[in-house]
View: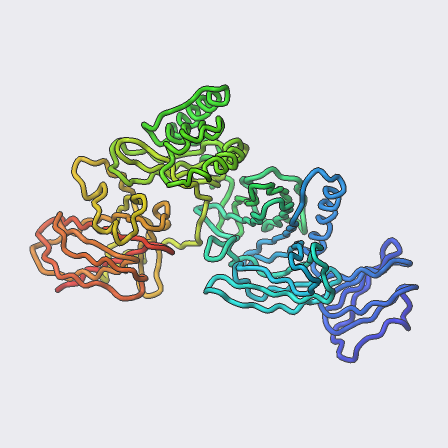
Length: 576
């Protein structure tokens, strides 16, 4: 590069850095603007961009970001697959993400066809999660104008303006750079980076059909890789950090989720000893036995055995998987809890066969023998070769049999447990903290307002109820609250039950303040004392109930209904 051909703007505050290697020159600009030339061409390089110059070649200008460099290198793998021609590749997504102690950042490359009948330089995508401060660049490193149109508190459409027109059927090709820590996989959903017990999860998804995805996760320097839900293409290091690269092709089924589970010693002091037991062969005896049963019976099913049993949740799972493998739509319809139009069952069975062949049984809680109609029991499934509970299969009890509900994918929200000191302080202010929870319960085609008056297991005699402890979280206006979505498998149009004990030194009047999302019924010592069939959020104020506590132990039970978007409760006891 000739010095007299490099022109600096007067506003440059920090000179560009040039590195010469293998007869190539790399020019980066942090502030200001540079115009650089090769023997045949010149190029303008603005702040935040860099150019690679080589004799007799067109200057390559990109975003000055090491993760963008990684993205473009991975794109060469996509080009190789395209040249081979074995796959139908309609969409491409390449993401490189890096997790630090205080933030997660990412760069991505994506292609999206122009479906319009005319040429355009504006690409509109969405609705998609709202991404603060996202920047889009074309492949020449030019910053694109982005217009955001919000459609809700969590989702927006983005219109991206490119310098060049894209013809009908051709592809928009863009590079994006953003913080990824608080970006959910889908609007309103779980975040890309979150914690669950000692594990930190890092995930990304492009579930578009026939999409080729490469995900590269640059883990924290101290990270201990525990598991991934897919096969790893490569591992290497970046500045002393482990980098894991995974590939998936979504095919016609849109199977695009990639997930990494790790420990983060620098953040929380975890060590190898904190790896959950299931990753060290310490699964419960019950889970091992159920896993052996599942594999043994699946082997028989695949060999041609017709399996028809709905006496347990595991048996119902095997029955519907057998119906899928054999293409038995009548059996599939018999064991399915949710209604399916007859003309859609054949297609669903064909699509489900893809997932059945890649799944393995992981775990399930002990199921009740007689839980009462409407009780939903979870079975956790993983991909073969992984122990991440990526899929949850709900099984519903009705009239002595178990039926299979719609499969759910693993979903979690960042949560913070309250400390023992915070619980002690909350109790001193009258908040009830020692709860157990049961559920969820639902009934086909019934809305939450109808479920309010339908008695389920905890309201009925001679029914087995699986109660389990509740973990409390801090709330903005209250020291503690019960997040039922964290305690139970979430379903819209469902109910859950809570119970606790209130000790009283004598018979005395008191006042209960009940906050619920949504409606609530309350029983004290078996007597209905309050009901409010309502749709509301937890912050909309409390119901006040005047009660009389007996001397000794008082039993309090709540029934909380759920419409959509989450179920929560807070109860406070005050002197009358």
